Length: 345
Image 1 (cartoon, one colour):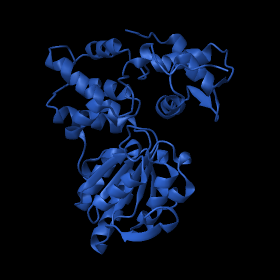
Image 2 (cartoon, rainbow, N blue to C red):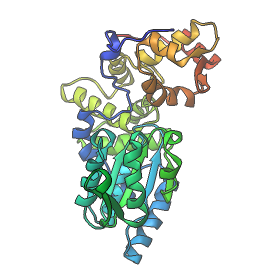
Image 3 (cartoon, helix red, strand yellow):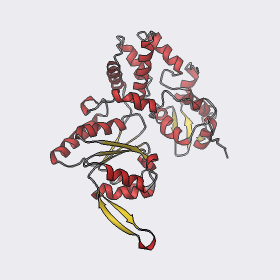
Image 4 (cartoon, rainbow, N blue to C red):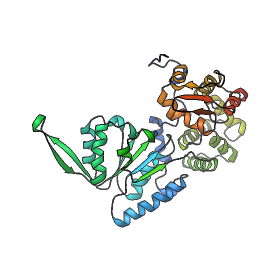
C-alpha cells in the first residue's frame, strides 16, 4: 500500500497560477471584475435565459426565488451568479461555506439571521454534515426549523418560522450530494467550460475595467487560449498582463506575451508543472491504468484536488481517461508531453 505524507515538500506547495480554485487574492481583486447583472455576464447562455425568466416571474409574483443548485468545476462563475441573482432580486447575499457550518447551531444562527427573500449561498454544499442537512430540509420546504429545548428525556422539539429565503448551493461533486437535499432544489444547473470567443470577450472586458489598453487582438486570444476555458484563470492572467505592462514590459507583441507565460511555466494549452507531472507519471506506466491513490502518492497531491481541480480540464481535452479509481493517459496526452517544450522555471 502506498503511504502518503501529509506534508508537501515539493513544488506543489506553490500556489498554481492556473488553479481554478478561488484564493484570497482572487476574492480581493475580482470584486471590480465580476459582473453585477445578467446582461453583463458572459457565457452560460441557457442558464442565463432560464434565470432571467425565473427572476422576473418571482418579482412579478412577489415571492422568493426557488432554490438553485450550481455544479461542476471551480472557477466557472457559481459565486458570481449568486451575486447577480441577489442584485437582480434586490436582496442581500449571505455567503458561507461548509467549514463555517460545523454545528447545528451554526446553520440555525445563519437561517434566523437572514432577512426576508435574502439569498443564502453555500459553497461546496456536498460536504455538509448529515445533521446540518436535516435542518435544511424543513428550512427549504416550508421555511421552518426544529429547535430542541431542554435535554435528556425531557427535551422537546419546537417548530420555529424563519424568513422566506433562496438557497443557492454550489458543488464540484453533484454525485456526492445526498438525494434528499438534491431533490429540494427546484433549479439544478450545470456550468460548462467556456469557448474561446466567450473567453476573448471576458479578456477585453477585464482589460477595459483595469484601464489596460492592448491594441493587438492576438494578445487577448493567447490569454484566452491558455486559460483552460475558465473565467477565473482568464481574469488572473489579465491582472498579470496588466502588472507587466505597468512596469514597462512588452505586452503588445506575441513574443512579449509568450515570454510572460514561459516565466510562469504555462505551456501552449495552459498546462503547468503539476499537469505535466501527472501526464508524465501516467505515461511512464506505458499506457497501463494507474489507481488514483497511487497517482496521488507519486505526485504528492491530494486525491480530491486531482479529481476536482486538475482532471476536469485534462478530461475535457482528452488527455486522460478515468473510471472511479484508475487513470490512463491517451495518445493525445502522450503526444503533447513528448512534443511540447516546457519551461519549469
